[in-house]
Image: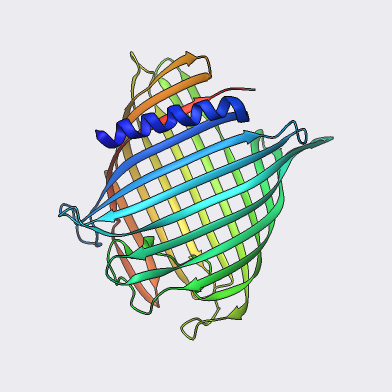
Amino acid sequence: MKKLFGLLAFMTVISGVAVADEFTNLNLDSHWRGIHGGLDNRTNLNLNEWRNEFTGTLSLDDEWKGLSFNFDFLRKDYYNTNSHWIGGGWDNDVFLAKDFSHGAFVGDFKLGWKYEGYTSDEFGSQGHGNEYYFGPTVGFKLLGQEGTFTAQFVYYNDVDGDTNRLGHTAIEEKTYGRDYKDAGTEGIGGNFDFNFNGTIAQGRFGTVTYNLDLKNHWRDATNTKSTDSDGRNSVYLDYDGVVSYDSPRFYGFGVGVDMENEYEMQTGNGNYVNGFYLSPKASFKHTFDTSIGKVGVMPYVKWDAIDQQKGKTDGKDYSGYGDTKLRAGLKLSLDRGE
């Protein structure tokens, strides 16, 4: 409870800054995840994860019409069942965006920087890395559906961690190691991403929506800095589709369910994983107008009732349950509109 009061105070302070610096929106998501590590472990909790994610957009129209500064700071901390901290790190994305409109083409250009790094209580640094990217995102219509296409040039510089890794545990996938290449490499590449989303049905009984992300990330490791790295992983594919049902809200309360399938593959070594998830959810949402904008408060819970994984790592096939089964948290938002 003390942490939640601290988050509320933090949002209040930032809101005051927002008025002076023309923030158009701010969002804070703080939640706990209970993880059942291991493909055969369905009932025993063996890891706790706490995530705090802070995102926002700062309008820079005074400097250049349509220019904005955007940020996404994500902090992850991991604890064992005795509440002892065993590792954590940052996964951040900061970028400038400039809107454009030319005939039928509407979108923006982005110039950004991503950082990711993790530390283990037992083994120290697990590595960190930087990505710098530039390119446009363009909106379009296909078969009556709205979508976007993103093309970006990327330079990356990765620093491998200590030789002692965390091992095959639930936290392993969360330690540093960009999923499209081996750790300890440097190079260039390109992102070629599609997104489709929209409403399937809407009525008195609720709303059904969908979101489809198709990510194709090519990387060329021009410098292999670690002897443990062969630089083979040249393309990373991440195809993620979600269909969501959300009920009408009754005095702020609402329920729903997400059905998701995500396929990831590293073409350089043939490693892949396909995850299917069916996740019921419940939340309470209240928004109210203030002198600085519309403020939203939404506590929520979400449970991966079905969490099936199937894939291949280092030539070995595997299948079973995934890691994350339950999450509970609080979302705070400030929307100042246009």
